[in-house]
Image 1 (cartoon, rainbow, N blue to C red):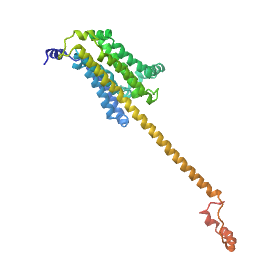
Image 2 (cartoon, rainbow, N blue to C red):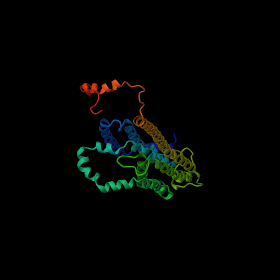
Image 3 (cartoon, one colour):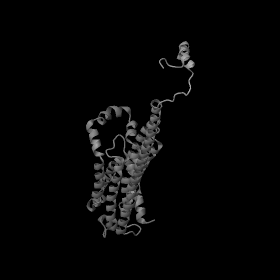
Length: 336
């Protein structure tokens, strides 16, 4: 094993405080999910539980694994870490629809007495609607990615543990906001139609591609810190930067294109269903009009008279009707 790799692995230790916090979040979600699954099994499925657990695992992999340690020596490892925090963990967590399970996971007195008045306040609802508006969320993530990849701030985050944590927090929480309208998390209401999320994702992918192109095709090392650290596996700082740009370009673009394609297929399916319903409704209406005209023709068209008629029967018939009125009343309504 490379001595530098061995030194990194032996010096790496997990942050037990972060792990305990993530474990508490998992327990709270699981408690609420179990209650909701018993009441609404079709809505809170095991798939939602698995998605939320996958999001937590992505956070652990990004922050509490050797990926974090190697991120200080390899830009490509650092880029994998950022990809997990931006494009993997947030959408998986939100696919679990965590708001209601968190509420149901809390003790009743905490949710009802302590948090109830605060959550019901008009100001909080207005603030919540504002921060999850698609324009706000798109610019939040785009600005976070672009600003933190400026050389001065990126090197600052590499040198300072505090700024490094601030960088990761900005990436993660701006990504949570970004994915919120895409996944349509309850209890928010969609501001834009679902098809509008397709250009929303594609334009975000364009920002990601532009930044990754700068990393891949730059003629010099952008981040001075990586030019001074020990090199692993004979990978130069410039090669490492180009590889990091490729990781940001391909997997980062896939993370935007796949949900955009899914939304496109859903939109086309809904359009096909609407067209089919319209055609079915038109056929039903046409058939209904034909049936109505046929029924009206029975009453409006002249009825043929019999060619021969027995006068004695026609004269005797009213007397028979008078004599058998009580019996006919059981079959013919009075007055007919």
